[in-house]
Each structure stands twice: as C-alpha cells, then as structure tokens.
Image 1 (cartoon, rainbow, N blue to C red):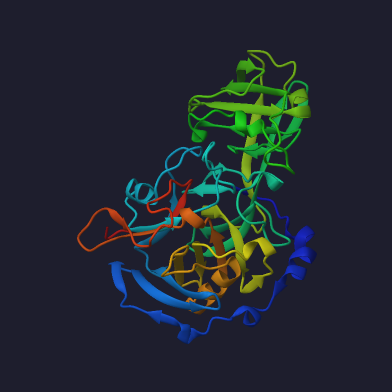
Image 2: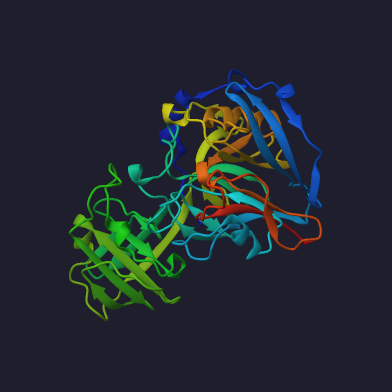
Length: 402
C-alpha cells in the first residue's frame, strides 16, 4: 500500500458535515445496564448489556479489547477469496480468532464481495466500488465507499480512505486502472483482478453504472490475461474460474475497451497497482463501512440511516488503548435495535468516542466469541434471521494465549 493524499479536496465538505460530540450524546451513561463481564482471553472481554435508547430497550453485545497488550491483535476476517461469503464463526475459526464481528456491506446474492476496500496482513485485497454501486445506507456527506476502519502496522486505530492507484503500460501508451478485485468497475474504466478474487465470474464487474446499481450490463467489454508481463489470453467477454497466482487479469467496460484493443498474445504489458491511503497510514488491516466518528468528531448522518435495525459497529477510545466491537440485536420483542445515529450514541457511551465505523447490520449483525475451554467461537448475539448470515468479511481478535 502506498500513500496518495486526497483529504485537502474534501476538507470543506467534511467540515460542513460534522458537529461536536456532545450534541449527539442522547443516551445517558446510566441507561447502559451492564451484566457481569466474561473474559474470553487475556485482554479480551465480552459483556451483554441492556441499553435504554429513545426508541426503547435493546440488547447490546460488547467485546472490549485491550490494545496495549503485545499479545493481542486485531485483523481482517475473510472466507478466503474476495468474491465469497461465510458465517462469522467460520471466518473466525479458520484463522483461530478468539472473537469477532461481521464486517462491511456486500454484494449479497451475486458475487458476495464487499463494498469497500480490504487489507489483510498488510496486503491490498480489493478496492471500493464506485458511487451508487454500493449496498447499505448512503455515506455521510464528504465520505464515500472508500472509507475504512484501519489498524496500522504499529497497532493504532484510524479512519482512512483507500483508493486504487494503478497504471498499465502497453506499446501504445499508459492508462489508469480503475479498480482492484471489485464487483463493479467504474463506467469507461479498466479494473485489475488477481488470484485473490476467487472462482466467481467477473461479469458482474461490468454491470450497473456509477449512478444505478441495477442498470444493465455493458455490451462493450474486453478481458486480457497477463503472465510474466506478457499477454496470454484475450477475450471479448468477462471470464470466470480461478486466476493463477502468477497471472493478472485486466477487465475493461464501455470506452475502457479502447485501451485493450489491439493487444494480442505475446504483447508486453506492465501492470502496477496498490491501494493509496489518503492520510499516509501504513495499514496492516482495513475494512469498509460508514464513518460515525472520525478523530473525535461525529459526522452528520443521512435520513436513510434512521431505520431501527440490528446494528454492528467498531470503534476506539481517545488514547487508542481500547477497541470496542458492538452488536445490537433488533427486530424482536425484546430488542428494538438501533438507528445508525443512535448507534453512534451507544458507542460513545460505551467508551468508543474517537474513531468509529458502522458495519453491515440487519440479518448480517453477528458477534462471536469463544467460551471457556472451547477452541471454536460461538454466536453471542441473536441474529435477526434466526441463524447466522453468510457475510463477506469481518473483524477478528487474536491472542497469543489462544
């Protein structure tokens, strides 16, 4: 991942969209009724709490992680490929996480890929889809699908923005790459895919537009496979099946096909790409979502964030010593859920008042943690679908003691 500052251009929009924290702290501290905390592992606790909100009573499930401990780490949970899904217990258990929550909004029912960027163990896995190709609530003003909650390589939590910074060079010249392992490529763009994408068809990446996710698929497409800097395959249609580890695939749509026209097997193509950080952070972990609080300032949330539903959020306190992973049950007689706005209030009252991001909710909301003596995680909240939903990614907690 490399650094490519972008925040200056957005400063005015973000400044207009934020307010001081106290104006949103509607949930009083004494309205969070704590149950006895359970130690999941050294430095990791789980609590179930009854939360009183302006909308009624809700049940919250809270993981508190001590980030000052050298034997505790937080990282991305995945099902393996970018274009795949799995239940959160499976995502956690496959990498021996002791606890975790579901992650980003995702392309449900099609590719399964997440909306926003992903970084796993310092490796760039995918970029953000363009504009209204997203799933989930509209981002707050001044933010977009590129917003992430990240963990730096020195263990600090950050809110950042990540975008694909890439270029391909042929004998005819160079052109910009508009995506990395995404279920949607920007109109007239060229995206790059690698082995991380998985076996799923890449056709969905040429469907919809930046302004309409449900628009028809493009009738102008071209795909080129490159191995060791040379073209090995050219096709007029998006491919499917596992991409080889030593191969790179360029997929173009609409006017973007002009960049690939004329390429034949054996032609030389140089491809270079990475996720560019707006703030210069050297990230080890990143996943997308809706920003609630950025560096201690709460953002103004849109009207479509006002629906009561199960919610998931992750955030840190001001000194960065604690991380809070929270799932609020909803859509039941015992727990009304939360709006995105009230979720921000809940996070602040629990102690997460510095960097906070809202993750996928509804039937996706899931919090898991190991029980004493077990080596596998268990679901601790009550998923509103009646069982775990398969999701694109999550955020997990790892301890050396495990």
